[in-house]
Length: 264
Image 1 (spheres, helix red, strand yellow):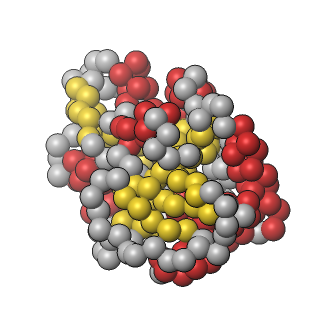
Image 2 (cartoon, helix red, strand yellow):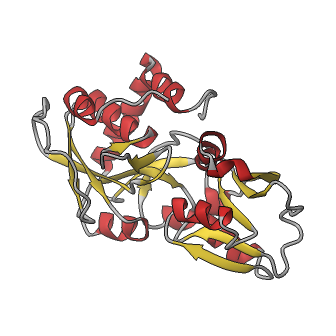
């Protein structure tokens, strides 16, 4: 898959990088934009949407999208790596201004933050080893893996209380837990786990099980960009920028870089 070097992203989109969890990142490039700096949080542990490559550089769909949005809105932006469990609390504490990190717009989250309109949609799905005969209707005593503080965790706890639920810190650990046999089944975002299944040696062990899962209460209408509820100006700018990159083809180019099908 094509990868754009981080310094080229910085030059093209006026993005500089800072980090809140101690990961070494490149020296920021000089931004071509003027005005206030808007800090945008990403997790950096959710490939192919956002992750650190072997050179500790941020890559992924969300990273490219954030750059395109900042360019379209003429905003000077910084990307901040933030652990997932503290995403919303630190947004509300004003440590950054927006979250572009594949955050599903659940009803619970909508009570805390404001979202742009959807920028992609993905169902959740069960995944297990190919030889395992399991689906979502028979999970009593099954070891079910989910990622901490996700919509999948909340959904599993409500509907699959008979399962033995194991919570992992991030998606890479979740996938490794399945491959290593720590759990029998995982519940994950379909587009995120697609990359692991299709493009990694470890992922060849496993496959989708059962039908796609969609539930507006837990997964909302897809992924949106989160801002503080009172920051209507930034919300309006981001929605307008999203319209612009979709109309002008930049969104489609980013989509095609990571997926051989539309994720809108």
